[in-house]
Length: 440
Image (cartoon, rainbow, N blue to C red; front, side):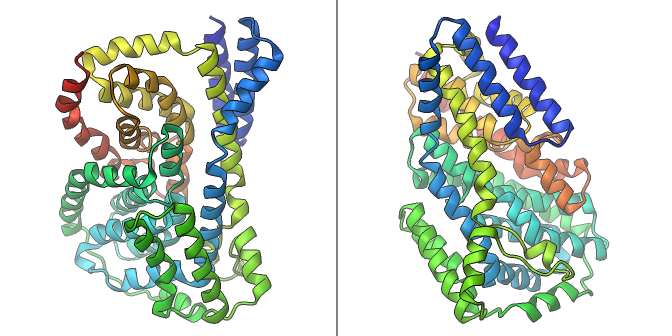
């Protein structure tokens, strides 16, 4: 009963914070206090509880340098013209008769390079939605295609914070996970492409306004050299180099491009790496290109560190045992994958973001996977196919609310973001093979 009270208190805190536009970090802090009090109520000493929290937080430390590099990349790629290159030439090569399809494919490319859904929607996504509005395209369909593409990279890019989070909490190899995500994502990707080809036939676009492209051309040197930082990420990913090394080399290349190609001053480049790229507010590109920087990841890092503190208490107090028993019985009837998908859906509906469903679903399902003789890699790919994708299905979740607001699109756009639910749905066909391994 004490655990249930703590959970309810935590959930009410989340709902209150979201309804009042208060940082979810406040709710997580309240949750930490609530679960700590529960542990104290069960007879654990203050020192023991503090050590549990610290051991949980320690698990997130390996992510902090990666998040710092992701923040720097998202800022310096803006300044170097790398993102502008994708936006400019991606728009130019677009076939007007297949606008919806190209919106998806271009968003996939940018999101895989950037590794962030918010960054993708806030750059190429804004440009595409402006073109859609001016060209008479169904806005919901266009927004759905952009969001699908944005979360393609958010799921499987080596520079994605969610991919790195899953690899860290499961103790698996990032590039091994990326490979498995590509394999399990082939059919959903192909089905999504077919769907958007069909939608494109009824939504051709007439691109007549080149204002945004002209602004990009006027403010950035769009030399082919500017795409080098992205190519470095792609190449080193194929070579399976450590992601921190890949991002460091990419940052170095973008650093020199800023100085030599974009003619920025050294102090401005350093400022961009820390505080993000800034353009004058009266410039129409300001809302599209500005952003990123080391400090942009500070809040995310705090959220993950605070949420990770739960795991230390959960593991050492056995608070989740009763829930795990229920899920265990469910897994015998439905299988582990469907149980994982159900758990991630419930967590996503209540937690209203992407980080907590990943951490909590892992916490609840980890023991069950081990009992069934499955590997950490099995759990990692199931998390990628469920907990990473399901938060975006709930309009009140930050994971989808921010992209929708950025695109000024209605929640009905989620219906057109078919990649989000085709990934978890189509991977249900893995169940027969999985059940053979778990029917012991």
